[in-house]
Image 1 (cartoon, helix red, strand yellow):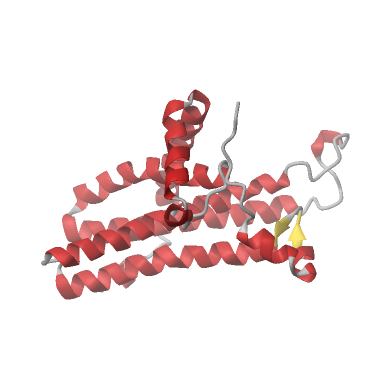
Image 2: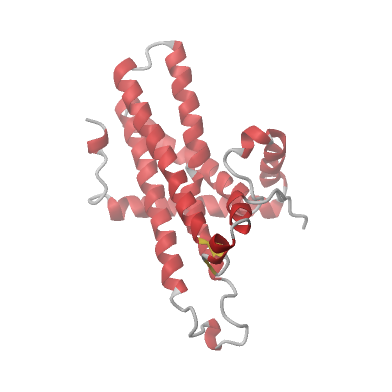
Length: 229
């Protein structure tokens, strides 16, 4: 099966390759600078929702241009929210860290990487749940509980598609502005190719599980009310 991939060099990999000491700061070919970069990308949707809340409290989106601004900010939020689950997918860097003949596919050298990538991926899960609840809480305050619940149901397939476009096709969030036609064509593959469609559907189901399980586990530990006083 043909795989449609963005062949442009990854920003982090390209930057590290030009600085040898950064290139050496890696765990099983995963650059540690990428970890900092991913955490930075998570700050963006958090900040956007906070700004949306401030904007709503001041304007109530009473005018048309205010509604348009809110839609634009929400669109940018949607572009960056898949980066949370992309962190979870980085656990794939555990593959082949041991020789093929290792007993039970476990080796003594670098066994600690299992704990490292598990913790890193778990942080992505926590951020995923937190940021979705942050946006959901804002929508509940503006439009009511029903709208916030519908939002969660509707947004998950889009997040799933965004993650797969980054994971499989190697697109970044900002590529939608740089090469919109190519990104759109790759997106259509997930509805026209059976293997891609199955990946998307199953991935979406697991995102629902991750969200609702995380919401259940973290409901006493994640305080959202402090952002909306």
